[in-house]
Length: 291
Image (cartoon, rainbow, N blue to C red):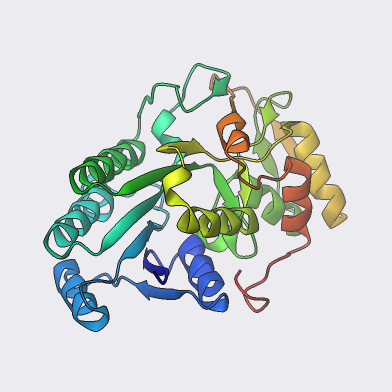
């Protein structure tokens, strides 16, 4: 059966990269469009491809800006997921769901190492909504006997990530380039909370081809963590910059992400150093094929 993908968030950083990547590999991709009822979009797809066609849904919800009101977060994340499931309940187009979730479901955890068995502690509306979306998709996949995998992402970096999906590593690079001060905490804490967009695209491609072999939840990150101070100076060296850093006291407990389950399942993770080198060299630009 021909692989067909339904894609949400195609205007966001990850979604736009995924769209260009799959189109470049001759995979059929249909972006779902906000503003048009999802039930109507599913109905039209059912007519266009016939009821025998099945799709993998890649749910790439766009990043939520800081200070977004909780009711807007609910509308953007939870309601949209419910509408997706309701549309599929009627037209049954999906054979699998790959949900790009977030490490924010763990909140400010006290454990120094986050694994898939770590109990989520959602302190923010955003993290709570992401966990709710996981539960909505899991319940729907159980009801319809389809595979569902949640990829919990840390900061995803690549060309354009600062402008479209701001995170710590993107901010460090941006401030080094523009000679802006950095205010950071816990310089000796180990850090691997990063996935390069090229790695994520490789994983999505593999997941679409073999959804049945993936666990239900996988934490993604880079391998071989670096201490935060080393990471900052490594970025600065790549950019020939001299960062101005103020190390501030903060009670937040630093944590690293276990990649053991991802490695056991053969996911093509790369080291933190390699991810940083690719990011600083602006590898995988939009014109190259994907992002």
